[in-house]
Image (cartoon, rainbow, N blue to C red; front, side, top):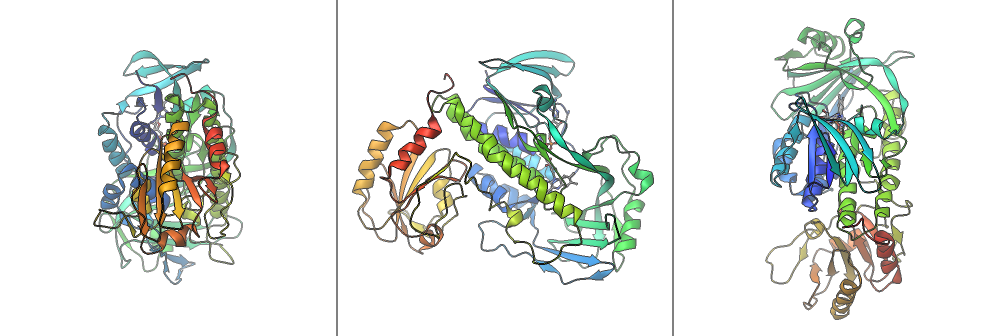
Length: 531
Ligand SMILES: Cc1cc2nc3c(=O)[nH]c(=O)nc-3n(C[C@H](O)[C@H](O)[C@H](O)COP(=O)(O)OP(=O)(O)OC[C@H]3O[C@@H](n4cnc5c(N)ncnc54)[C@H](O)[C@@H]3O)c2cc1C
């Protein structure tokens, strides 16, 4: 019997199910559609999502299927400005372009490796919860199934049945305009990996626009623009792809390109097209008892900056390890409160930021935006009450709540090649990373034995030092040959408890600091969910 039902097999539901499976949680995943949608909504994959996929073991196959998006040509009132180049080469990963249908195909393939397949044509109609579980009514190819789960995660998109069923509000508003999308071939001199936006600014209204985002296949682009009035009238819902409405013809797309792009490009071979509309809404809560929502079910906003799918993927990554610890009885159910405490402020910030960016589109003034803002590497859970910072005496050191940065050139005795910190962190446990000043780790080894005896938290313990340190039982030791770890984490003696989602849960001046035990105690609370 499955413990968790994941509703919806978009990118967020597929990530949720894949992560639950990787953590060893039994789950089912259902989607009301008979097959995936052919439209390409998300293309932009943030550097942070690639780090998540790295941990999941699927970054390479995603990168192989995509292309790097590393620049943009802007054309305002017919005049090209200098091409903007986005250099993220100092980060583990840059910004990838991968059509959403490819992301979904590869996430589905990843799930199959765990023996899980999406149950298609299966729609959740209603659910009811009590103290021990959730009863769900599923409509499957004309038949009704009543099933029971310990938890349900609604990843069922903007019009979420799950969110409605548990009465969570979704306040916000819709843009009045309708947009159109198409997948076309374009002949022009734009370098591979470059996007283009051509705008005509008007007083008191949204700019006329033609935006082309490159797809991996040579010469192909996903183009988007405002729909003319006659087409706009056929849109029915106030968010997302209007799949019931007739999409634009190639001539409709070409007319806008001719009007805004100089020299006029030649569009051909339209593969699909669609209308779409945009609303901005944030769920009033991310959880009701044993029912959670994630992804577009919890937050919708303009696609500016390519944040929606990426934010949803990180919702799922945040929740999966917590459900695991609660379901196997290691932590009490109160750990699940941290999901909303950590992720809802992130959703609120993304809705506000993308709304502002979209309302000021083409009229950006002043400083260039922080190049990291859309990478999602700056997301932090500081101050949420679920991380603990006991200081480390070094301003350069990342704080509790921050994403743990990567480090390179780490050498382990007996292994003939260097590894990265992300290689060491990969996995489903917490990792206590200790920055050792000297060459003796015998005390850390003794501490590891004691900690494991006292705490049920699945934990690995890693010592990193600039010096050679003799091997000790129960811990893994690495030499910081390039001082890359020291550059990223600050001076020695500090210790960091890194969570399974790569965030620093606790930071202290030494692994013997009592704050570590207090933090683990808070995380695990009293009893588990009942095993
Ligand atoms: C034009 C456009 C461009 C975009 N570009 C980007 C971008 O570059 N980067 C980015 O990060 N985001 C982008 N987005 C946003 C991104 O597409 C969404 O955020 C993403 O699809 C959300 O994924 P999801 O899994 O939460 O929901 P969805 O993809 O909507 O999936 C929900 C699934 O739930 C299923 N479902 C619904 N109800 C039920 C039910 N009752 N029972 C069973 N199944 C159900 C649906 O059939 C669907 O398959 C863009 C969006 C648009 C419109």
